[in-house]
Image (cartoon, rainbow, N blue to C red; front, side, top):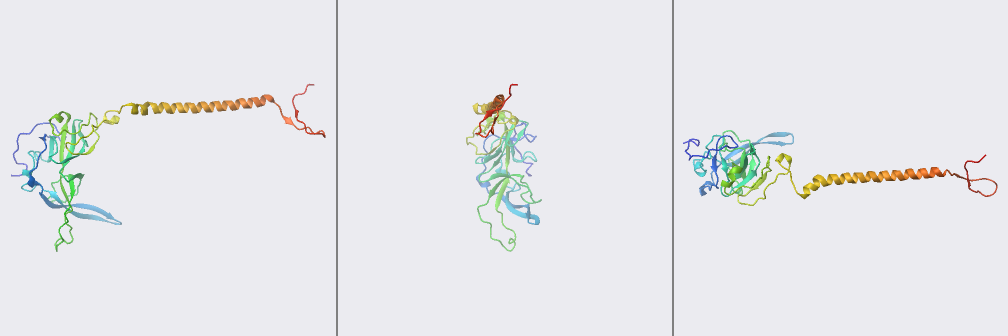
Length: 291
């Protein structure tokens, strides 16, 4: 039976960010314990530039393999319900022990908040460049990445020029929920308030406390409030205007004093000149003489 021919229980019909109805996952899915080793070796092509040289290199890694016969048994019902929408659930929460990433990174018509889920030890990333036909080709560009702690196997005659895998990758689960779904989800996701464009929470471990996110710009649907914001909005402009007025007034008063001093000097109309009469120099006021 192919992966898209398997039977599934009735799903909850609802709108979703991807268009078709998705399977709900309102409580954390608990993967069976024997599902942790379903990885197969694959590779990606990576472009490089070194000085004047450039080219492509093949990077091997371990990828979660949906073609593994055991894979479907390790997934919740509905994981492959819609072709092209694998690992998408709504309304949903992350599986048990997984971490949610990029919460609020996308919003569909202002109704749905989205996030990506990665298993323990993995972090969310985006990758591309899978080689066509490789076993891990089914992994999307929205993926979860983990560096391998075990040393690669020793090179052999056939592997001397090809290093072993150094990291693992699995598909990131894409979950979404509407505000009306929050009461049915456990654990309850962080609150984003009613912003038009949501700020992003980089990561969240389900159950951890997160302060409610508030709108901070007009584009996000609101403005901050409080005494501090009102001081910045009103107090600073008014204070700057008053300082400018004070500077102008001081300049005006100084110019006015200078004009008064010059006018007083002209009103005296006295010039002190020396008189050479063979005696001593005696200052004499020179002015208009009566005739």
